[in-house]
Image (cartoon, rainbow, N blue to C red; front, side):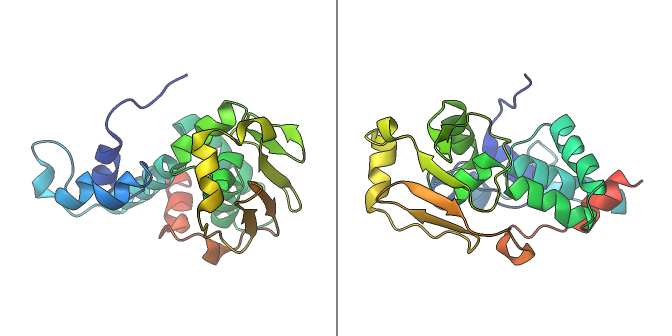
Length: 205
C-alpha cells in the first residue's frame, strides 16, 4: 500500500496551515511556526492561487488531515454524492465517523496517525468486539474501549489521569478508557476551518 514517507511538517507548510499531524509536537517544536512557507527553493515566493488552485489545496488539506490516499478520498466523495444530505457535509461526516478519527477525538492517541496505528494493532473494541479497521464507520450508541488486556500499557495507563476534552457528540471516561458515540456529529463540531464547497467544486469540474 502506498504511504507518505517524507516529513509531516512539509505537508503543513505546503498547505499553509497547521494540520496537527504530529500530535503534541505540533504545539511545541513546530516547523511551520519557524518557517511557514512552501517547501523548496521557491517557497518564499508564494503566489496567489487560481480558483482551481484553491479548490485543489482545500481537497489536499482535508485528505492529508485525515490521512487518506487519493483513491480512498475519491471513494468517500462518490459515496457522499449519493447522500440525501449536502455532498460536502456528507463527506465530512463520514470522515469524522471513521474509527481512527473517533479514537483521536476521544484523546486516546495524540494524532490521527497514531490512532490509526492503535486501531490497526487491534487495541480497540467496538461494542465488545475487536475492530482493527481504521475506516470503520461508528454509529450512535457504539461503545469504544481500549481492550482490557492492553490498558496496562504505558501509552494507555497515562490517560487515566488526564483530562480529555471531547466534542459534544462523543463522551470518554479516562478511568475505564471507554467512550461512547452520543449523537451524529454536527457541522460546528469540526474545527478545522474546512471549506467543503471548494472540494465539491473541485470534483465537479
